[in-house]
Structure formats: C-alpha cells, structure tokens
Length: 246
Length: 246
Picture 1 (tube, rainbow over the protein chains, first blue to last red):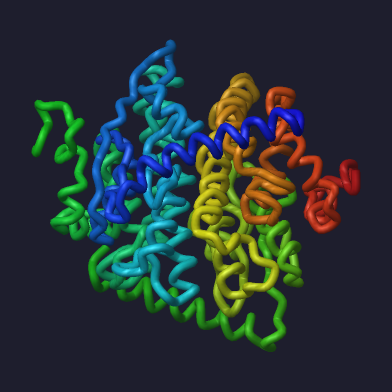
Picture 2: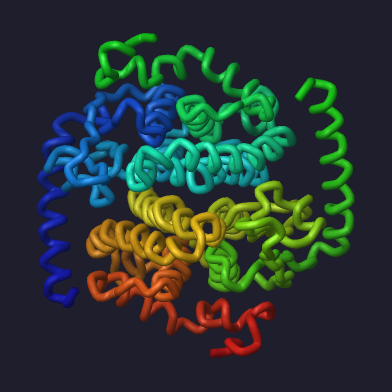
C-alpha cells in the first residue's frame, strides 16, 4: 500500500473509531458489548473471563453462516468492519473494539485487576500462558469449524479426534504437574477459561477422555462453578431452542 | 490419575526440577539455554526476542526427526523430559524450564523490563497481542511441519498456501491500520518477533506476497535489522551446511 493510501486508510479508521468511541462512551458506565457465538470456544473463553472478573456486559449474538462453498464466515457487514479476521469474539470496551480471546483476557486483567486471571509469580504466569497456548494455538485452531468445514464431512471427525487427542496427551502431562484445584495451583486463571471449552469440544467430537484423568477432574470441578455454568453455550441467547438450558 | 499417583508424579517433578535447578544455577550469571531448531518459527520468535532484549544465551540445537510414519517428534530423551508437548522451543532460565514461545516472550518482558516487547498503553498492548495470536494461533499451527507431515507431500503445499493466504488477508487489514515503523506504531514488539518467521514460511511455501504490501514493507524493514538478521535460520548452528549464511 502506498504511503498515501495507507494514510487515507488510517484517517478512515480514526474517523470510524471516533464514531464508535462517541457512540459507545455515552456514559462511563456503558456496559462492554461482547460479540459472541454460543458454540465458539473463543467466545466462551471471554464469557468465562468476564464472569470470573464480575464485569457486567451485554451480549450480541453473532451468527456464523456459510456464504461460500466450504467456508464459514461471520454474518453481518457491521461485524466485518469490527474484526478483519472475521472471527468471534470481539469486545467493545472503554471506547475501543478488541479482537482475539487471549488479547481480550489480558486486557481485562491489566485494566481491571480485581479477581485476577494471572498469578503474581512470574513462573506461575509463564505456566498459565503455556497452558493457554497449548490449547489456543496447539489444539483449538486445528479443530475449529473453519478447518473442519474445509476438510469436509467425511474427514472432519477423524481429523478433530487426532489433533485433540495428540494435544491432550501433552496437556495431561503438563496439568498433572501444575494443577491443584485449578490448572495452575489453587488460583483460577485464564488457563481455566480455555480448558472448559476445549473439553466440551473433545466430547462433541467423541474423543475418549479416559486417558486424561487430570483434565477430567479439572473440568468437573470447573463446570460445577456457577459462574462458569452461566457461560455455557446452552445458556446463551443464540443457543438452538432444542438445546437451550440442557 | 489417583491422588497418590499424582502426588508421586509431583515429587518426581520436584526432584527432577531440583536437579535441573542446582545444575543450572551454578552461578547467578548462568546464561539461559535455548532449545531451538533453526527452521522452527516458534524457536525463531524467541531468538528474536532474546536478541532485541539483549539477553545473552546459549543455544542448544534440538533436531526434529521422523521416528514414526508421518510423525515428526523431538529428538532426545532429555528433551522429552523438558517439554511434554515435544515441541521446540524451551528456555532454561532462572532455574526453571519454560515452554511455548508466547509464554517465554511474556516471561522475558515481565522479568527483564529493559528493551520492552510490549507498549505501555493497554489498547496498544491488546493490539500487539491480537497480532501475535493471529499469527501464532490463526496461521502457524495450520502450516507447521507436524500438520503438513500428517497431510502428506501431495496435499501439504496447497494446504499451507490456503491457510497462510487466508490469515494474511486479515492480518494485512489489521496491520494496515495499526502499523508505523513496526507492527504497532513505531515501537518494536513481540508482534514483530512473530511476523518475521511467518513471512519466511509464506515464501517457503510459495505464497504470493503481492496482495500484502504492509506485511512486505514491515518484513523488509525488520529483516534489515542486524539483531533480527543474526536470528535467521541460516545463521544458526544447526542450519544445513549448504544453506549456512545465505
């Protein structure tokens, strides 16, 4: 892009973000708005994080629909403007729109230190982030809807099972050494926000969880937490009616 | 795992990490040791980060070899103990072994604030992390050697091209709005540590970069930086001799 076109693009961006900022900062008490899809792991991570940090928010269901052969993409023109990666979630907060679940969880923790999602100790923080990345870059991207749709129905389940199982073998070893009540010791963290949706996906794709007792135990403990239960796909406004509250 | 077996596993881990700690903390000036493979994007990110932060380190080349049909895995028994995910990099530092490039970059920045890899402003930090995750969870995992090896030679190049191109379309839009001299404004950050290896991979898999002028411009600027040049795969001790220093 030439310097001129880049400068124009930046002006348009600033003008647009100015509009978004003025409309979203009507009051300092304006609730954050989460663009979320009920079954998206990445949206679910942020719903858990917002819940654990006790941050009230509005949810704006953002459907994923097929608009080309073998390609899922996000639905509305408005949303395409918000997130060029065309993936959920996005969070409108403090007059800005943030994208990517891991970036959002860090932002929430850095701007709202109450109910922290990272431990104080730097080694424990590194362990939390290692677990976050094992799930968010090592497992979930290989079994997300976009990839499975690209592979086609015939191959998608076997593919998802292969990569979830491979990831869980390593994750089980890591968690068997790091975990206490939660993924890292006895403090809940962003690693736990990521684990719950990944275990849900494993079950969805019929991965046997018997070889992963630590993962199972953590998942059981986390999913009995009321805040986490409220974030479940089946408790979301865009859950298909036949599955709602099941 | 029963509570007893878990307790035994933890004892073994503590004993082992105690051994590692005592051997790696002979002197407070002990250099960090990076387990790295020259062509691994994730290792390269950490080599750039260590270079930019001016942290001296020793490198321990860790080969990736085929030991099962269609499966790459890490080489030594010693390394399997260090990283249960059996992936490079790992960094021995401050008496601990850290795994995962994103976790390591954060650890370095939090324990050694000089030459920061994250801006101070929380919105810019979120933008840096968004770009890090677009690359590290949205693009690289879909084209890493493990996945391409699983797909087989016939399909791997087309697959890599598809996912790198899809990721770069979104990344170009994000960077065209966020970048200055570097990925986010004029401060170098961990986003830049991730961009350079990803562009190298795009070229390796013959992805046309013409549609991505911002990515190309940033890559050109970054790869003329002397510190970043020193981190290049072809400057590493495990580079194949015919490519060394080319």
